[in-house]
Length: 177
Image 1 (cartoon, rainbow, N blue to C red):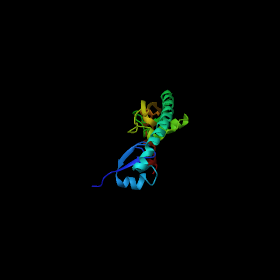
Image 2: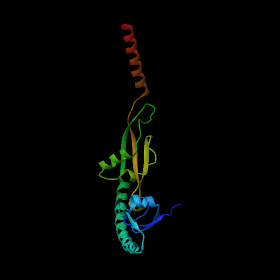
Image 3: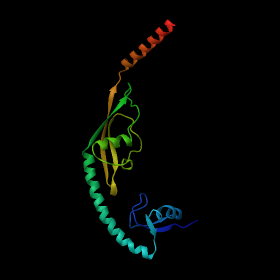
Image 4: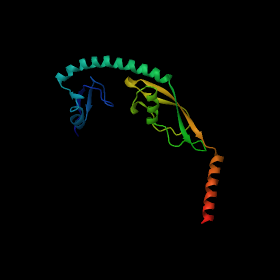
């Protein structure tokens, strides 16, 4: 079995580590992705001297990103979004609400997030009020209030009337033939 290689991260790599950290990864991942894209360097004595410098830079960047994330968190928690959806006579939604719809609503409010920021595991398929978990940078989490409102509820009687009208038209067509 091959050994894992120790690398010093130069840039943040999602699900692996932050700049200035020494990580152990498989040889292929290091050789094919991290080193060619200049995310990391092999951890030898000369490179480890950079570690202190990278960690200091990371602390400064981290504090700035954390402040921005906290501001965005306050802004998001003040927001209360609502979306209208089509509903059948029984009150069930046609379709669902998921990342794209939420991102569109946020874009209208001049808040730019990505799909990765929204921590919904499954699409919402019900009417009501929901709290959407949002992951921001530097492990700051926020919640967004989303209200799903029915656009038009078609009454069962109206649906029955339309079906009866269609049946009458079919009968008339058959009689005329």
